[in-house]
Length: 214
Image 1 (spheres, one colour):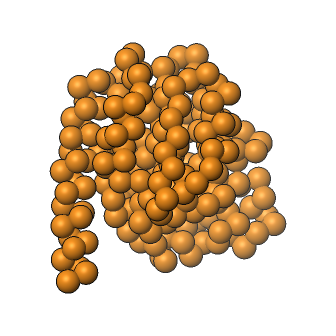
Image 2: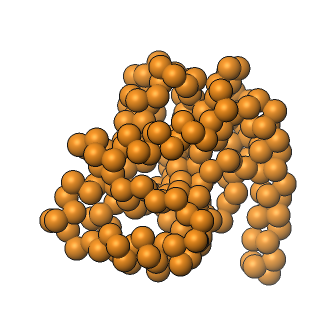
Image 3: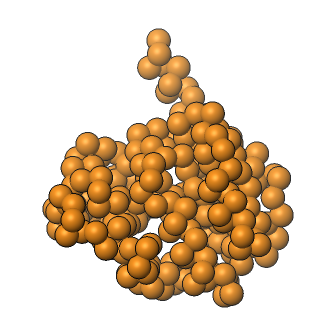
C-alpha cells in the first residue's frame, strides 16, 4: 500500500514538473536544481558563481531549507530576486517550486538557481522540471558516495567536486569518483573546484554561460 501511495505521489509530481518546465521554456529561463549533502557547498557555489556572472546574466535564486534563512540571507546580499522556501521536509518538490514561481518577479530573468534541501536521497526522486540537475560532492565526504547514492548521480547532468583545496588532507580518490560517476551516467559533466580558493570555478562559469540563451 505504501509503495502504491508513493507511486501516485511521484506521478502527480511529474505532471507538475512538466508544467514547471513549460513555464521555464516560455519565459526563456535556464533553471538549475542544486543538490548535495548538508555542508557540501551549495550556497557557496551559488555565491561564487554570482560574483562572476551577475553583471552579464540576470539571475534569481530560490533557496529550499528545512528551516532557517541563513543561506537566503547570504545570497540576498547580491540584490537579486531571492525567495526562501521552508520545506519542513527532506526535499523540494514540483508543487513547492510552482508556488514559489508565482511569488517571484521573473521578468527578464535568464538564470534561476534552485538550492535544494541538503540530502542525497529524496531530492533525486522528486523532479522539479528544471533544465539541469547539479550534484555537489565535497572531498571530506569520501569517494564512496556515487556507489551509496547511485540514483542521485544517475539523474544529474553535472557533478561538481568541491573543496579540492583540502584534497591532500582527506581520504578522497578523485579519479575513482569520476570513473564511478561516468559509469552510472556516461553523459555527466564533471568539474573539480574550490569555492574557498576559487580554483576551477571559472571553468564552471564559462560552461554555464554557454548553456544560457540571453
